[in-house]
Image (cartoon, rainbow, N blue to C red):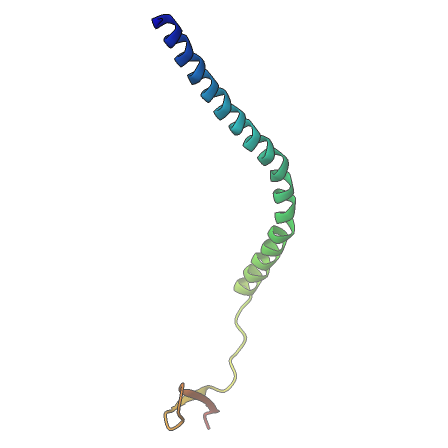
Length: 91
């Protein structure tokens, strides 16, 4: 009797382990199939980011252009709602 209960428990434990291993293998198989598509889908975005980074580096290495006449900013508070910013050139 005791031997039968032990064998049943071991078989049940082994069945649970096999089901868990099967689910893990199924998830791993799906990921193995989908990951290459994700990598190839990201490549154009990475190329775009690299181009933008190079453009930023070029802008940072070039000397700044002389600024135009300075401008003043005035905040109008007589208008209802959000403040209105008005730029005007200084004389």
